[in-house]
Length: 314
Image 1 (tube, rainbow, N blue to C red):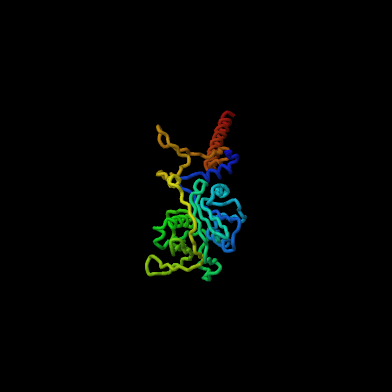
Image 2: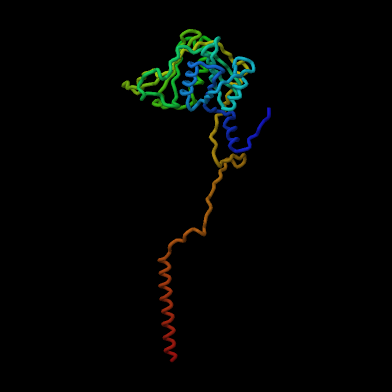
């Protein structure tokens, strides 16, 4: 492959932004349509885009060359991932053998890391729920993600689905969080080893008489059943490489500060240009007046003494 070097400063900044970091940016989601999609699946993809608005990119054009589970069928998918810098994707397709089919997957270094295929059943759109619009979740807010059921700890397919859904909905990783900013929750319930109920709820905080408020959940949609069909786990080598993390914490760079082995820590100070010609002189008018008075008195004395001498000589 031809390696292209950036020719402009803007392209260089884009490449630096996409380069590997100690603390990665938030994961963006790529939403794609297959050769054929049903009305239900199109609505699911649109609802996912609304839930991830601000952190998702949606393509509405049909893609015939994408077949994630087939060899060579992920080439176009990896190209779109590199183009949009997305590390999670949702691919929807509809066939007679697999109706309302949704493939969720993660990317590592813009290559397919793992895949899980689910079927959509009992889908209810956001518009089918009636609730007070004042409690509607805000765009880009951090969610609670709740997984209920022993299957998420025991069944390998459900464990993988749990990891993928967590990466899909959690957004950016933060250290501190304001409790009042939590206004949504995703509830995932394992009904059976191959079926999960997923719903989206709004969080309503009420007074409880203590510091911690009482939480009520109001279902705002969408909701659906996810039936697991196929999955593909990453091999051990790829998993080990993707799970590597640096022990060094990123240090905040200090401007105009250098470290020298001999002189130690040195800093540079920039002094603004001194415009001496434009600088106003200090006002010393009182001193000038006093000097003028003294000069006049001295001159008068000299004139007086000179006139006396002239009279005496006459």
